[in-house]
Length: 543
Image (tube, rainbow, N blue to C red; front, side, top):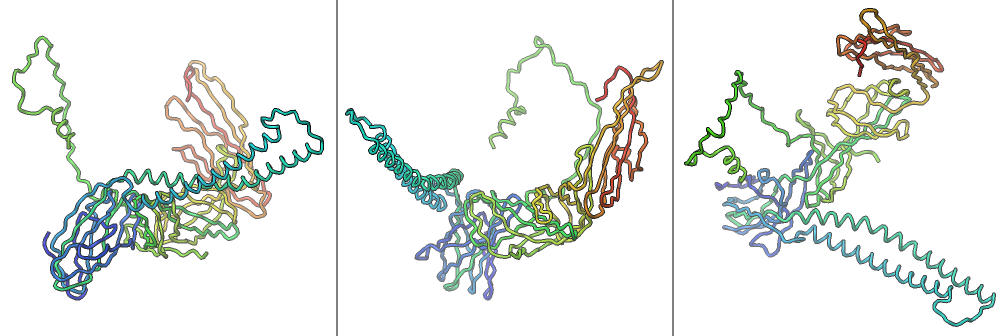
């Protein structure tokens, strides 16, 4: 790697190497310098970490070490920036992979200390419980006479006093045991969590270290920023929609659920959540020619008696040999939005702490205020219920990624539903749960089989359905009703639509879907009836 000169005033010396930084120590310093994670950018399946540290170097040649890097970092992703007020040349660097003894890393040692404290607390609780259990046993024996062989007779007064003593002591023991039991149960999940994380960390037995050699004209202070990408970090979008049915307004809170198991905690770091997808192939695939040829008949193998065995092995390896060789190789403070037209990055407003525990940590990204038109929809053939929906437009500057929406309607939790990808400016329907004030009924009025034809016998099935709708709300509503008739996929099966008591708004001949758009006044009731006939050859069965 060639030398790179740093400028005299605000020196920026950049070089790309296969290293990362957990802590930094210098060969010429009296004590180890500790770096700090200052910024994290989280993607859908990884994270980019930025660490900063200041190191003082003497004049001339010197060396410092960057050590404790995560073992699973992407070595091709790491970059370093060095700034100084003096002229500094980077002479070279050496990268090493280190294999650790079990529990050698700081996180594991900290977890072991926590686990020891919790287990000590649990043993102390169990010891107190043992004392109480001994007392219980003593009073049980006292009540029954224990192992006494004498035939002493107690008076009624003495028996009453003995019983009162027995009952009072056992009640006191039970009362004192309750908080001990509760404290013991509370320790169990925390102990299980730490043991689980220790098990995950014990699988990480390696880390990276790099030594950097620099030459400085004079003693200088180096301000170092190191960036690298680690896996085992990801985020998912989560939404909370609050719908006000009186105004049609929707407040949509867009949050990120972040998890990470990188082996290092992100403590009070500037956090950015990005919608970029670095895991995708970003190279345009090349088209390969598609050749057409007639298939050639496979020559028959010669009879075994006619086959000759080669006396000399072939100099060209067989396909199997080649394969073998190859196998060996309050007010919601929103995040600041940055968009480059291809992806969106949300900069969280305040520094965040995300420990390496694999647990979900929620942070707010933005809040979008939407307004749309409320209406109802029903598919009574599938479920006789009216579902409130609001037709909205994503007026935000960024797309809404697929995720789960926790839905509140007029302050009440309705449930959750999935949200598909919605581009900026796109229209979409947000379903807001069912409304029992709109009554829907679906009935089958006719289901009749018959045989027709004299020379060509055919079977016939007639169906007729009725949909009854009534609005018990105090205000008029708009309701879209969906139903269907079957579609034939065979020329011998014919489907003939019958009469509609109410003309449909639309009929899709390709899918058989029928749509009615209705306006209902308060307490108004409307009825829809429709029928169809299916015919097919006798002797065959329709699926």
